[in-house]
Length: 602
Image (spheres, rainbow, N blue to C red):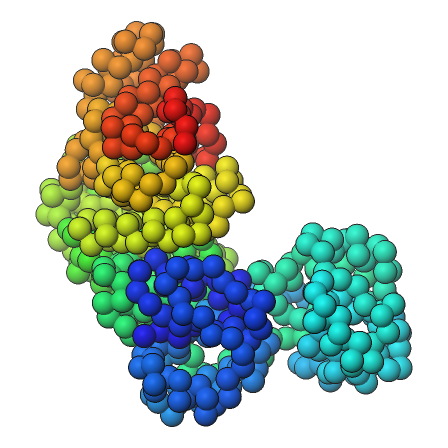
């Protein structure tokens, strides 16, 4: 059993992550008004001291504690650390993402330090954005000087502030998005906030104060217990649950070759710069979440170093599972970061992949990840060579030869993480997620292929909770059947062109092992939909379906893409006879220029 602590944004994200498994768990919030919508969580309220939490964890057979509480909830962090020590329990800290500490901010080690600095700097009129719980900690300041406190717009916060002696005229209520307007209205000499991270609105507060030339003071976040394992998002939390509570998720996730190459490249550069091999290395996923991978081998030379990371694909059947991703980083003579082809990495021979013909088959997202990590450590020129021993033999079992990639595998990955899309267990996971959606958002389900398309499609439905968005992976047909079984009245499906051309032909499982793009079929659709003869030339010459966005004329796109969507709708509606289905076709930049929907509605 898992215990999640915290009614914060991070607490809600942790609950959403765990809830999708369909298994029971506990989540605890201090206040009764911090309820989190979920289907499988057992809710607890009220603070627990060390003895109470220890007894609870023993009685309920807790195997993992997830601390997702506010970063300044020091007493809770200390309580969790002591309980974990007594019971030998692992603790995962779901941490916020923090911007780098800006030199324009006056950083304070504590509230007492903040009071001292404010007085030393002659600040006699302060706007405190630190919350109602900090009023007592700032008493030495506001008893002598003018101080306005911003608190949550709820009766309990107002009563607590007034009980501590703050005059009602010196209290303002929090309103989302009003940072600049509030500063203009109050006109303080300075602003005091705390290092609350991105989800706490720190960047917005800083930007507003800077724009109005108002000095900003910030209290640094407390240091967490050293025994806590820190994660910053969904994937990190899931990996730790897979580690400490095996079987809680029915399938294990893994890492892409791009993530492994990024970790190895960073480890190699760190070894080159410091002269010391790295046992583990932390890197950032495209969604800014930090992950850590072990480094298997390191070799350091005078002007170069090589590091190796062994790829773990989780429970997804992947030909690269267990292979070594080796990256050599050498000091370059030219500025910038240059990518070179190593053993077992393919060479691009055809256009259309978005990569230079003749260059190594390292896709754009892994390149960006590697550049981000290396440029943050070193501003000189670097040569990066990625090798995969045995990669040429592995590539024969992939579609690389057909795509014009010869001599090895491609270094790929858009999210950095491999989700296990390839088994009955994943379909069952889809069912559990849709059950949660029905419980929390009964009117509409939004299905999409993965993280990239979900980010795009969420802009269409900003009012829906996270649980309304479910990944179908490649199992479009199974997902629609489940939606029908659960009587979801409205379903929206977001789809990219690569899957759309397969679905249009009637393939409801779009995995590349089950079906590939059929150019003959695409030419037939182009002819029937009124496309120009040039459209057939484009189809015959292209390597990937996404080239259609660029190489077709606007008039041909307007003929062909709606035809694809009509065919997709034709194949999907028999599986969803009593629901209203909307299909959105997204381009590579997240725009939705084409859509269609069924004629009947719920």
